[in-house]
Image (tube, rainbow, N blue to C red; front, side):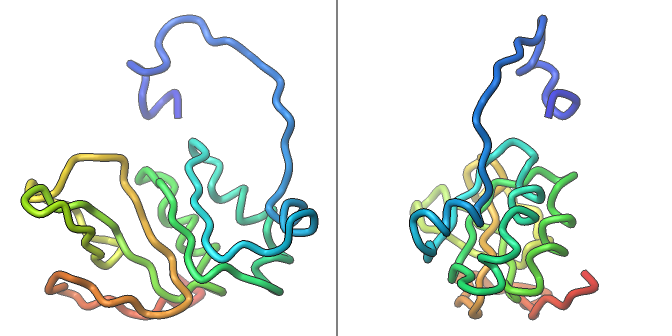
Length: 142
């Protein structure tokens, strides 16, 4: 993330120790979760690797995730086995509505500039926009 956003991370870095866990460990302790929201600064793929048992046994209906371009394809590939539908999410400026697009879509000026949000779902969701190409089911090779 430092190389993607040098102006945010300028100056000398600070190192702090933090406790880490996996989604599998959280699910064992608290039970399965129906919706996941991930925003972990480039470690989203690692989070999925720490969730293999949960994804296999009790996958959430949806994973909402902030992903910057270098991390999107890794997450799409890792999530395709359990979450066959991937969308780019954006909020329309005019109406403040949430719109879903095929995950490869570049969002235009009609939408708020925000962190790039994606939704990975186990079931197809209705897109509020005409999409070209239409949203297609992901396969394991993407």
